[in-house]
Image (cartoon, chains in turn purple, orange):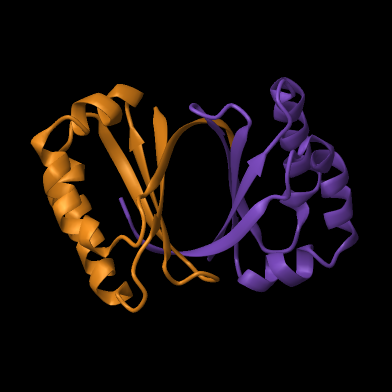
Length: 99
Length: 99
């Protein structure tokens, strides 16, 4: 299992619309992708235009190849992309420890 | 419940030592703090010097006031600080949605 962490910055004042759009995009598109295991959308307190989307995938390639090279990726970006103030910063992580 | 997300960059080549140090610091110091609910340490795949520490607190003030103004904060920084290549970037988040 790997974690995708996407750091998102949206246009000021669009929070309410984006809250709805990102939930729709996850529900209708990403949650149906191969290897999707779960997600969180976190809203930043100090920087209201910042969101962190965390998606758990079975493998790195489920995200970087299977999803990103699918038509679903374009559909997803069509839903959330118009809100972005800059390109998302996306990297992947492996769990070291938790409790 | 709020999420602290700390984006950490450590010195190259120190990963094995830092893996042990951050787990020790959470176990011995942070996990005993008022309002601590849980944590994850995530290691970046693309950028080996990057770690994301996520801590769940009952309230924002449990982190920003109770912990940061305690002696425990200095103890924690004494354990992990020597590995940092730059100051941690820390912000706090509220959950919008998950599954």
